[in-house]
Length: 276
Ligand SMILES: C[S@@+](CC[C@H](N)C(=O)[O-])C[C@H]1O[C@@H](n2cnc3c(N)ncnc32)[C@H](O)[C@@H]1O
Figure 1 (cartoon, helix red, strand yellow):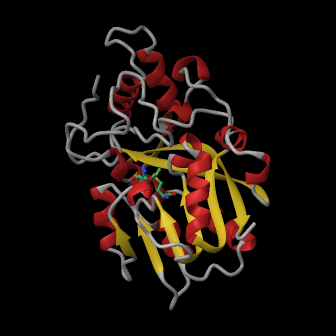
Figure 2: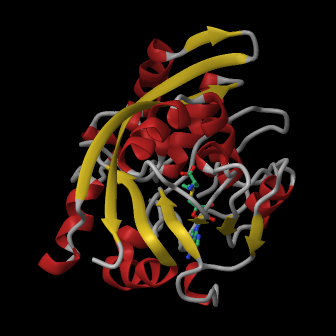
C-alpha cells in the first residue's frame, strides 16, 4: 500500500528505516520513490537538516575521537554529520549507494570523495582512513560482524558506529509519535541487538548514548496521518485512523511552512580503536 502525497509538501510522511526489514505493507528491502517522486531518503535528509541531530551527536563523537584525521563515512546520506566532523585539510571520503544522496553529497562545498556503491562493493584499500564512521546505516544491525571486520580493515585508528538506542520503533521515524499497539514494532533498542550480534572480542571500547530530536515539518497533518496509517498497513476503513489523526494533530506545532512534528530519539556511539 502506498501513501498519497501532493507535490510541494515538505514531509508528507516518513518511511525511513534504519534496518533492512520491509515496512508493513511493503515488499521491497528499502524505501522506493513515492508517487510524488520524492525519495524517502531525501525526506529523511531534509528532516536531519531541521533536527538537532548533528548538534547533539557530533560533540560526543569528538569527545570519544579527539583526532579524527582522514575520515571515511559509510552510508553518509546527506553528509551533514560527516561535514561537521571532517577536519579541514584532511581527506573526507564517503561510500553512498543512493543516487538521491549522492546528488546531495556532490552539492556540498567542499564535496567529499564519493564512492558510489554499498559497503560490500566499495573496493577500498586497507588502512585508507584514520577514522571510519557509520551512522544510522543498516549494516550494524543486519551484518554486524562482517561489517565491523570491513570497517577495521579500512581504519588506521578508529571505527565509530552510531546506532539507534531508544526504546521505541527503529523503522518509520514518525512511528515514534505513536503507542506500540499502533506501530506494532519490536521496541528493543537497536544498540542491544548490535552488541548481541558481536562476539566478546568484537565488543567496542566505548559505548555512550546521546538524546536528540528528529523534527519533521509537514505541510498537512491529515495527509501525514493518512500516509502513516497506509505505511502501518492499516486498511482504508480502519477505525483507528481518526484517532491517529487526533494523536498527530495534538502533537503538531504550527510553523510558517506547516506543522512541526518531533520524535525523541536516542543514539548510541560505539567506538573501537584499531588495531584492537
Ligand atoms: C538513515 S541514512 C543515514 C545517513 C547518515 N549517515 C546520517 O547519519 O544522517 C542511511 C544511509 O545508509 C545508506 N546505505 C544503505 N545501505 C547501504 C550499504 N549497503 N552500504 C552503504 N550505505 C548504505 C543509505 O543510502 C542512506 O544514505
